[in-house]
Amino acid sequence: EITQVVARMVLDSRGNPTVEAEVALAGGARGRAIVPSGASTGKFEAVELRDGGPDFGGKGVTKAIANVNGTIANAVIGYDARQQRLLDRAMIALDDTPDKSRLGANAMLAVSLATARAAANAARLPLTAYLGGVDATLLPIPMMNVINGGVHASNNLDMQEFMLVPHGAVSFRESLQWGVQTYAALKAELQAKSLSTTVGDEGGFAPNLHSHQEALELLVGAIEKAGFRPGIDISIALDPASTEFFIDGRYVLKGEDRTLTQEEMVDYYAQLVDAFPIVSIEDPMAEEDWAGWRLFTERLGGRIQVIGDDIFVTNPRLLERGFKESVANSILIKLNQIGTLTETLETMELARSRAYTTVISHRSGETEDTFIADFAVATGAGQIKTGAPARSDRVAKYNQLLRIEAMLGEGARFNDWVKRAT
Ligand code: PGA
Ligand code: ZN
Image 1: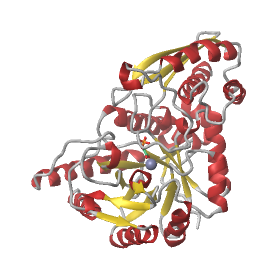
Image 2: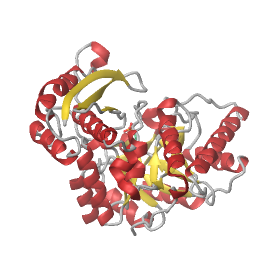
Image 3: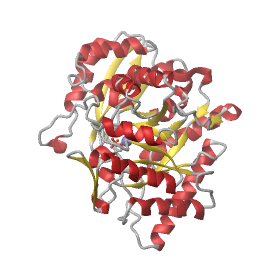
């Protein structure tokens, strides 16, 4: 039974305020959670309630915190923490808006996740086992974002994320090691070419380059220098986050001084997929460009994983539209895009019902909270993207996965490289 709910302001990895909630139960168990924050956010994400005004450049969260300490606390005190669904439903009813703009998705999610942790602690179970039961043994393949661009860095790359996918490893621990070694080889390669090794928001390097092709060449070179086989041991995933460079119906690649139509943009990707060991592309087309998405999926959906992030925003209604219009074959899962644990699980269930893969994701503004690491194993998602193997806001999740894998021992599984929808 929930006896106390308290929120406070803490900082995220960009130094912006965010919400931490703490839930206490009769009997003494407690749970705590911090919500992350995106930069290239989807238009239809649940609303992150910010104060506006002069403090913190308008990014203060005093209103969200007051909502937790007042309205939400009053409503949920007395609830059984194990009744996650009831608790989340109660908050949704209390908010009573389609986009969680009254209470704030940041307020609601902090309480939702802190409650799950408190319930796990009361049951004396690791969060993974509490949420996922005895079947929760599949460690996710990490997608490590080692070159940053777009709105996550101040370099000239229009595409936001270039990721390593070490799917050839036999365990999570080994895949992480391969990623670390390739990240180090990439750094050496950049230094040898007198390119910048300063990093972006997700810990990946952010050099100025002539083209996306050059970034991909650097990655393949680093994979080889580290002693791995591109496409066999380690492949590449991209998140162009193309909504950010979709302007007046055209894809504007400033860094390459080119402006492309939908068809030309799809051709551009097809050429990259032909030339490089790319296994997954997220948000190749903009969130409002459903026609472009259909073209892309038709052309490349049979060859690679096509992940919808901004276009689906972890929302079941948008995912249903994706099914109907044959858009994507995978969905990115971000708890704070929808705002409660219950709704996130429902979206994942819906994805599975149509054989869409699910990829658990961090946000570019992260914290030390490692909920998504446990969540990835609990749901058996099989894939997680949580940044470069550098910076504690990113590494915290990988470290938690190392602990989970060690705890599972012989029972741990890795790489059921999930069948893709075609
Ligand atoms: P965001 O970026 O957290 O800044 O939205 C992550 C992504 O686009 O996947
Ligand atoms: Zn994305």
